[in-house]
Image 1: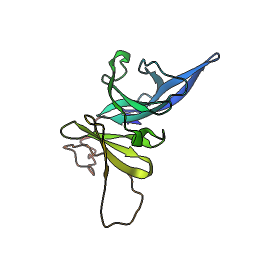
Image 2: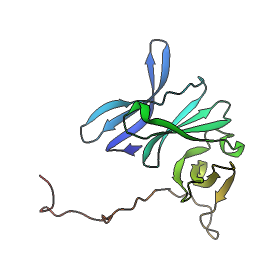
Image 3: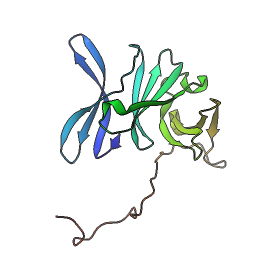
Length: 171
């Protein structure tokens, strides 16, 4: 996952006979590695962790065994350990029946009552945070079943094909 000029991924760190989940980051500008603090969560050894970017923040999904719910944690201030905050849990059996079904979170709705979730095979669902119900998103009604890539676009005043001239480049 790319955020703040660094690539992030989940790793397993081993100290003696103990092993635990860890987030590693590689800063592309400084060309160095660092460990990102994890949320302080009481978990079972069978819980599964996943990393994504959500709401422009680093996000950890905790899949609780036997996959009865998925907790969503956001790091509000990058690299600040105490800034991890559990924002909600996904508690619908259709979503969490298989820990591999949720790929990542995409976006909140405008009302912030729903979350758009990417699930296996590039499908999308809306999850209502209040009534804990899901709705499948249909991309196009008259298209054959094809795989597609999901990309989140962020508004910017810079054109996507903008290439600065040599006069505009910083030394």
